[in-house]
Each structure stands twice: as structure tokens, then as C-alpha cells.
Amino acid sequence: MTSYRQPGLVLTDRHFTVPLDHADPTGEQIGLYGREIVSSTRAGADLPWLVYLEGGPGFGARRFPGKQAWLGRAVQEFRVLLLDQRGTGLSTPANRQTLPLRGGPEEQARYLAHFRADSIVRDCEAVRAQLTGGARWTVLGQSFGGFCATHYLSTAPEGLKAVLITGGLPALDARAEDVYRAAYPRIQRKNEAHYARYPQDVERARRIAEHLSGRRTVLPGGYVLTPEAFQSLGIQLGTGDGSHQLHYLLENAFVRTADGDELSDTFQQGVLAALSYAAHPLYAVLHEAIYAQGEAPTAWAAERARAEFPQFDAEKTLAGDGPLLFTGESVHPWHFETDPALRPLREAAELLAARTDWPALYDAERLAANEVPVAAAVYHDDMYVDTAHSLATARAIRGLRTWVTDEYEHDGVRASGSRVLDWLLALVRDEV
Image (cartoon, rainbow, N blue to C red):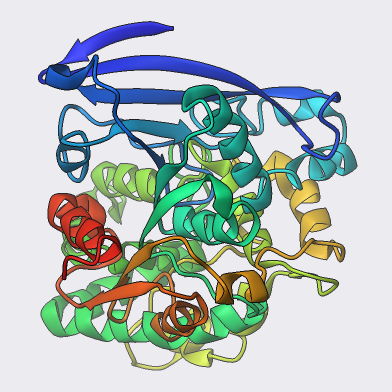
């Protein structure tokens, strides 16, 4: 272990070894990384543990420079573990560089099938046994981290003192296509709100899409920017400042050159930063698999559902005079053609999309009998997680208390995490 300091904090790097397949504990092992953080004034105290599960899938735990967001509130009473979920951050990475070590696409897909919430929760239980001496801990799950926390309640509630969920109550039995079918109308509302705020962006977005439809555009690093890829910048519209950031990106799209108007370097770099999956490829590879349960394949559910909403078709939009609609949190087959970080993983992704033996993630009966204190922040008209699905799940989990708010977007725990965490702790303690 290595310990070091930031202002007011003591941080310790912790490394763990867990089975790739928890059903085969003596088989292949992989590494996990967790960053322990404690207030410098309470470093030697016997504090309860709080483990943070990041959103995603495919993102390592946030790297905090000090007591930002919810962390400052958490260290007032907890010893915090920021866990890099398997395959992310400093945990044994899974990406285009490392996965060929597994073999071909079939071996890669078989390996990646162990990177969903069920395995992540088993990892948490293995880590808890080492850190707490068997004592229960509190879980804070953001977005996909909340999906993991809900699975935790379904399979290992004996390890939980309390569960706090922010923007991450999943549908318990919805298929992947149900999730995306519910998503497109929400995404359209976010588009309408964006264009109402920035009406000048209607013309700008159409002009960019027309420019892209007429020529092959390759960004620095090899990303191919198609009209559909450009539309996927709408993933920003579900965050607190995402509409503003999208507007600033669009306003700087073109620059006059000797050959006429071209997409500016500034715009191209901004788009690449927003769209590339190089830093989090598991987000794309596993995004539909996180909803898979039972024998039905996900089969590129977002692409199939999109066909039901022709208003999102860029070609049809450009043939008329309506506004171009940006898309949101969805992964499509063409992502594995446009993004050089994903191209080598295309065949493995296809195999995962065709898989028909995904185990169940949630136990409705066990959740109905839940005894663990649970509180969830549900964001009104959340673009990423359907509010109706979340509230139905809230009703299905015994004792769960919700805080439904339109004060924040999906990233509320990051934007004003101290207040969000205060509310959730008060709810699980029955103080409000």
C-alpha cells in the first residue's frame, strides 16, 4: 500500500486480486484497484466504510482533486473507497490493446461476459471481506453504479449497511429494446429544450450534417465523423451544462480556408474528445449487455428501436427543412466502424449482442422483502435512466425512499454532490 496526501485528506492505494469467474474461484485471477480516502483529521479513527460505484459501464472511479462534489461530505463520517470496477482504471484493463491477449473474438466475448453488475458485486464482497473484517458497508451508486447496487440488494444484502443511489434505479424486467424505446422521446424533449434555448443552433447543426454527408471526414487519430456520429453528440444533453457545452462546440464549427469553409481544428478536437471511446471502450462494448437477462439477445436494441423514430434519421431530416435531432445514450453497430478504439472489438461486440444465456440480474422477491435502508435520487425527466422505470423499481424495493427532483440533471451528485448526499443520508436514517 502507498499513502499520500491532498489538502485535508489521506489517500491510500489498495490492490486486490479476485477471480475472473467467481463460480471458479481457483481459476484465472484479475486485479482490482481501489483508492481509500479519509479525512486527515480522522485518519486513525475506526470509521465505517462507504464504497463508491461509478456510472458507466466502463468508467474508472472519478479522480478527485481534493474534497470535490460529494466526497467532502462523505469523509466527515466515512472512510471512502473509490473502486475501479473490473476492466477500468487501474483494475486489469480491458480494451483494444489488451483483449487480443485473450485470443480471437470468441475468447474476448467469453471474457467480457464476466464484466457486468453480477461480477462487480461479487468483487465488492471479496474486497469488503478484506477491508472491513466482515462489517457491513454503505454503497453509493451513481447511474450504472446504482444498477450494481440494486443487484447487490438482490444477491448479497447481508454485506450492506445502507444503499444510496443517484440516477441509477434500473428497470427490473425491461428488455434492452424497451429501455431504448422509452429513451428516444426523452432525447427528443432534450433536443427541443436545447433548440428553444439556442435557436441559432438549428441552422448550425443542419449545416454541419450537410457538410459531413457530402464528404468523408476523418478526425485526428482516425475517427470517421459521419452525420450519425455527429448526432451522437447529443449524449451531452442529459448533463447539467451539456446543452451549453454543445452550443459552444457548434458555434466554432467552421473556418474559412483557401479551399472554402472547412470544419475547424478546434471543432474537430472537441468532437473527438466528446465521441471517442478510447478511454472507456467497455461503455460501448457492454452497454446493451447491462440490460440483458434470459434468452433474448440484445441484438443492437438501440439501432432497432431508432427505426421506430424516423425523426432521428439524418438523411430524411436533411431532405426536408426540420431541425436535426441529436441522439443520446445509445450504442450502434456503426460505432465499431467510425471509432478506431472500437474497430478491433467489433466481432466480439457482435457475439455479445447475439448471446442468449445471460443470467438474471435482479430478484424481485428478495427486493420485495428488502430490509436494508435504501434511498434514491431520481431526476425528473432523466435522459439516461427512464424516470417511470426508476419509480416502478422504487415501489418494488421494500422500504426504499425516493427524492424526485428537477433541480439537477443526471450528474447531480457531481454538480452538487454534497447536498445530494446529505439528502440521501437523511432519508436512509429516517431524519426527513
